[in-house]
Length: 107
Length: 469
Image (cartoon, rainbow over all chains, first blue to last red; front, side, top):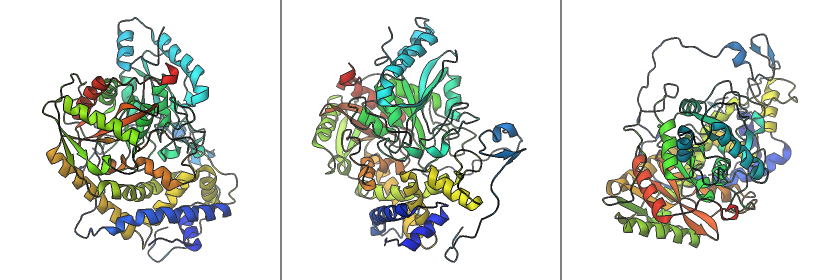
């Protein structure tokens, strides 16, 4: 089932917003294939009649009252900002090219 | 003279209440111990100054947010990050008169089984500094074992409280999922993460659990405890049914010395009046690891998406535009293990692979939960080794991610089912601690504490590392 090639690896890295260096591509690629081979074991079981578990505890609809409560003041919210301007986090402009994704894939 | 190697939190609390000791003296004793032993052991990433507040000190794993105190999750991507609010568990500790002594070392983002994945260097096992303390919470376990804190908070996703407790010879509880708030804790895998107590003995562990547990409006995955936490007393296990799951106890990966120590403890259960019987959880060990190493990385890939250099933490200066900034920040800021897991997780969730990997793993998770539930129809508690081996040497498993993952073989299955687990030291093998784990149904902490306390009293394990006595 596994055996992720270089193109797929780079695609996954792009989805994860990780720019891998060349030596990382090789090393991570090999390790990823080992890990994926090991975890593919889950496909050995026929679980067509088994419902999936997303959550270990049976909690349903935990609501909160729609009441305003104190929140973080702006200065605190920006306290760890690598760069700020006024009450904004400052970031470099643009560059957000759509990732090369498969049809129906999520960016 | 305060002997921090032997002082329990319960005793420290009493000494403060009876005014036999001042908070300043108590704080000072730990500071002295830290200055003596921590340069070698490296349990702490940050040690706090004495702020003059009254109370018993506690060490906090550095994945838990502490207001005004640096919190790194063991990662360069959060170096310099100082939270502006306290995690709920910290608020509750402070309300009960506890004071944050310092932040303990951890595998990066709680990903690891040896604390060797910390971006700031590993922690050494106080029993043998050439060996690992376990992980990811090696710093907390080692700090308690070495008398550098009376107790500590850790976090457990696949065994990160229990396994270090086993390797360092102390008591660690992974609580029932949903009984301890994750608000303010740095998220790794949200359907698995739980904050829990690390202590020198079972009573201290139960005491700390009672302080942090309970529903939190800030964490909608928490619930009220069905009953209040009580501290265990008594050594009689009459009426208790103890299950010995074959697959967890007879696995070939378990070292003979570990197996023997746990077997002796199982016999002791019989001697204390418990009914002991075999059982089988046919898929839990074999499929637990692959299930976990799909679900946890998948959830991690989502949780770690927030580390993008925008609002906090490290930002790469090498990005010519925002996209490059994100990508380089993350490549430069994350260590190997988070990158590996993010990649595995992203792949497992991506279009075309979701059903086969993540979707299937979620079904395996149901199978694991059902197997445990079935066992609990006949037994009150299951017992097995916590770790297949005693503490291994630094560097022994770092070359192979899969070899490292095998450290969690026995702790993972019950985590997937949201079940609580208590590590209790039960002996030594090759001079190193062996821990047994007690697994119970959801909300069965009282049973775990009862059995743990009885065994602890009967075994009489000395939690002070031999070389420090």
